[in-house]
Length: 448
Image (tube, rainbow, N blue to C red; front, side, top):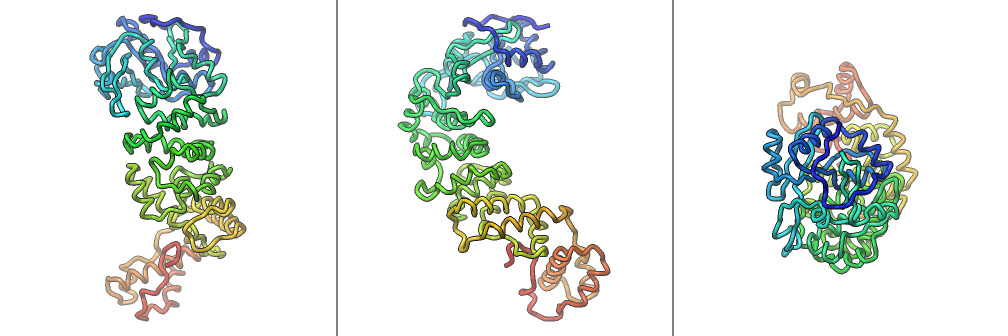
């Protein structure tokens, strides 16, 4: 049973059908939290993305709450809560299966740096709280107990029309927080629901105020840009960002020579690529040093940067036409090998300009993909270790021994050898007594 909390200072509308189903199937621990707040005499509403996505019939993963209690009062009611942003009224409530962010209703004013409000006032007005939000589709609230929707800015109508529109005057909204520029592009990509255009006033305001992104931290830009690149319709969104002059504000992408790479993002194969691979392709004509600097400036994680730079460095290289070369390629790169080949396929099909010295024919790439998929994914460990090789060959520990071990390991992988005896026999056939050990084949891709 749901308990009614404080009512909102806004009229309520009947819940749309999708939201009715959504409310009926809320997690039990969330219902317990809503009832607890209401029992203590507070008002509580579901807000933001969960309201928007429920109305679109999409699966909701995260639930945000707006409350009229102060964060200190919330922490008394929920002693195990986490104070995640007390200055902005935010606490995180621990549920039995997931956490829920609860934010005190607030109004904001004075955005002198174009990034954050100078003044935050905690209020008891849902109306004022929704006024400060970015887009109409994000400025709705659901009173679960009363089964009503609060929509003072007609977000539900913009959802039906499929349009991104700011709350109030778009110029003012962007001045308050320049990151809303990138959020507008991100919300254009509605996945299976296609691409939603921006309201004309919003689009014009973004083009006229794009320089405000220079005031936004790299970390915040990276969060939004990564989501844009990971989207289903990233090609069209990035193309618009390029035309609007937004992309050049924070990235080293050449606006003249990058159109083929942007079109490559529209390939059906793009869905097989991670965000790291997509970034590697988008910046395929950029020197490694400049891409490294960009990724560092954007404060990407070490793991993201490492994978992106690896895939970027492999552009223009594929295994030769032998199964042996493909085995080494897959052994070294693992799952990254498949992304590398798909990335190269897209580059070839769209004639994307890269720094590679030679082009690769599409049929060569398709053959390499077939060979990759035919090779088992099991990782083979070296059958002959260093101690065995020292005893057998008399070569002391050092560089020559390491080169011999590397050579044997490569041959083991190339020939898919699984027995110790066959490796012993192979060792006997190699000219390991020579001193040109630095020229012996190595376990590398591409071959060096």
